Structures are given as structure tokens and as C-alpha cells.
Image (tube, rainbow, N blue to C red):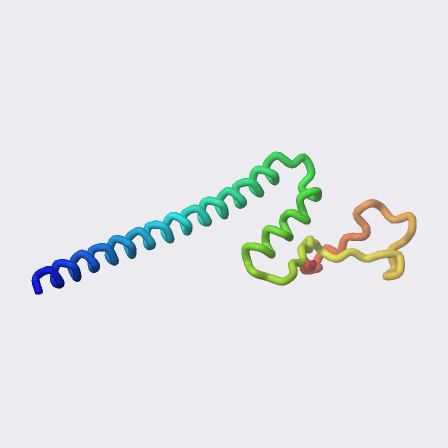
Length: 108
């Protein structure tokens, strides 16, 4: 009887040790994934920082946003005031700031 009790205790100890090792392994894998994610973010930041022309990095930005937000698509637009063109009454020989609409709200 005592031998069976000792065997059960040993079995429980082995099971507990196995579960502890499994949790440690899972935590190590999560830490590895987190490090890989942080490395990817840091790599993107370095590319942007080292870039001479940020327009060259727009596709990288779209990929980065898409990956980290789970979005299926991404659009990047430039917010600026609208301008008037020749079709809207701008003279062909107007000065270089005549196309600006002074009171206009910014748009994409």
C-alpha cells in the first residue's frame, strides 16, 4: 500500500515537472516571437532613419502598417489645401502662388 502511495507521489512529481517544463518552453517561445517582432519594428525604423528619400519607403510603410494592424489594405495620402487650376479660372500666366485657395480646408 505504501509502495503504491509512493508511486503516485512520484508520478505526480513527474507530471508537475513536465508541466513546469512545458510552461517554461511556451514562455521561451513567446519571448522569442516577441523579440523577432521587436527586431522587425526596429529594422523598419532603421530603414526610415537611414533613408535619403522617404518616398522610397512608402511601400515599406504600407507593408508595416498592414502587418501590424491586421488590415487587408492601406492607403497613404498627403493632406494639403486644394488648388485651383486653369479649368477653374486660373490664368495661364498667373504667378506661382495664384493656384492656392487661401481659405480652403486641408484635404487628402
